[in-house]
Every structure is written in C-alpha cells, then in structure tokens.
Length: 175
Image 1 (tube, rainbow, N blue to C red):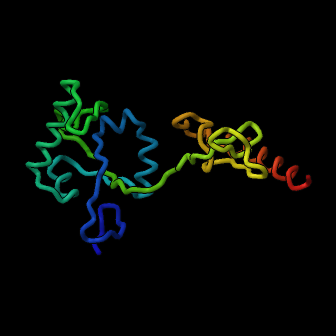
Image 2 (image 1 turned 120 degrees about the vertical axis):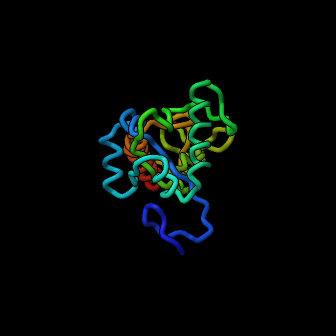
Image 3 (image 1 turned 135 degrees about the horizontal axis):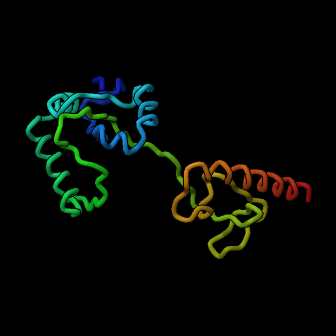
C-alpha cells in the first residue's frame, strides 16, 4: 500500500484521477467553499507546474503539454478528445499560480432510485398501477426531480414524501 496525496491508503496500482484548479478557478468557484474543503484535507495547494507535476508524480513536460492542450480547447471553444466542452478557466496562466489539487475517487453520491411513486408515495408498477401496501420516499424513488435534482431539494422531498409514505403505510396497516 502507498500513501496518496490526500493521505488515504490506496492499492499500489490504483489509477488516480485528480481535480486541478488554478487560483483563478478557485476564485470563480468560491474560495471560501474550497477553503473549507482544504481545511478538511481534501485539497492540497502547490506552487507552479513543476511542484504540481511532483505532487501528481508525473513528468513535468508531459503535464505542461496536457495543460496547454486543455487551454487550447478553451481558447478555440472546441471539444477535447473526450467531448468535454466546458472549460472553466486556463490551467497555464500568464503568471505562476497556486494549484489546488484534490484526488477524485469513485463513490456513489446518490442513486436517485428508479421506483416511481404517486402523490400518495405508493410505489407504481411500469403500467403506473399501485403496488398495494408498498410506499417509498427519498433516494429509492426517481422522477420527482426529473433527470437530476438541485442540491437541498432532496431533503424537502424526503420530509414531504417520507411523512406521506409513513401516513399511507399506517393507514394501509390499519385497514
């Protein structure tokens, strides 16, 4: 096992992915927000491309080439080789910069389920008929927010449909 950038223990052959932000991007995102994550150890700050390459354990020349390639897509407003079209800021600024680096690891953030419910929180079959006595709320359900959800809305959804599902389940049990 080896220690990673963020002091997590990872398998030796782990292929890591990193988020790299310039000071400009951090300002645009919200420095106070990222500062909070940095205080928790999720970001490391390094000065200049040479130190960034050392931190990421990659060749400096190759990293400079990748960063310049990224900036070319930004300037030309063209998708990169992966189809990315949103480039929030230059990675090779005119002046040396502090890079903010975070290791990205795969996790399940939320699943947004797939079970359809009605206004009474009853789980629905594919033909939209209710499954008697089965109710759902929260991340087991899908469709309340469309294809995505806005941050914070899920809490309200859990309260509203959680209370509804509980009430309906109690009524079902009493009957």
